[in-house]
Length: 354
Image (tube, rainbow, N blue to C red):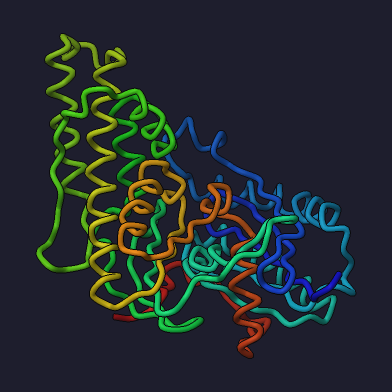
């Protein structure tokens, strides 16, 4: 190994992720045990079920990460772990394992904000990937996930100024709820994205909540409008009395496209406006919704038109994973941050104040 490794643990929600990251950027191992299939029948995440699944999977995932990296404890510089925000029971599984490992192996423990992890995924590199320039400060960070949606300005590493956040539903939560209304199941985001690709008419108009000049976001009104529009579409298709019957494929595709376009339009417009207003020199995007192809393409086009580099991790690094916690944890460790063995879960931990 040419550099020291960070052992990183992520268990904030429904993914058990453990990674070994070299020099804060190079992925030597990144293993994730997903609970999507486990929660799909419920149409959403069941906290107690999620915590039990983390308990079941965390040690096998750790073993797999060690094997993938071909590393030993002699290579480990620090242990990083997500301590918030997230589900309390899920967070505690990862925290307690991290504390035990740090204590037994006498390694520094670094608590990491899950949201900061999504930001620092933009600095990660895969094995064998050609090195590339890092994001340039000052920058705008857009994080869009199932539980959080916000815009922040970064003038340097670990320095954040919150510009705007969701006032109600996160973007990913809205995707999940509308996905259920469309009969697409859970998780709704990927399913809506796939359905929208088949749309040919692009004529379903969904409202946008611009909130004046604010960088804040709101998706609850869009969700309510989606329910009305979908109900009307079912009635027009003669399905009002048979709620279990699927929508015609062309109608489903157009509805999915219209909803997705409304979300993407607001996210991209506000991100670009924030970048222009702050004099940003680059944009980074992370979070599960950042894996959406329409959002990635639209933001890339708008950023390129303004000469702004856009750095978005590959889709597998947008969803929750240990690698992003390793990237942020290594940066925190280098800055001198250390956590005690009294580190506890912070389910409502914010990234930064306005």
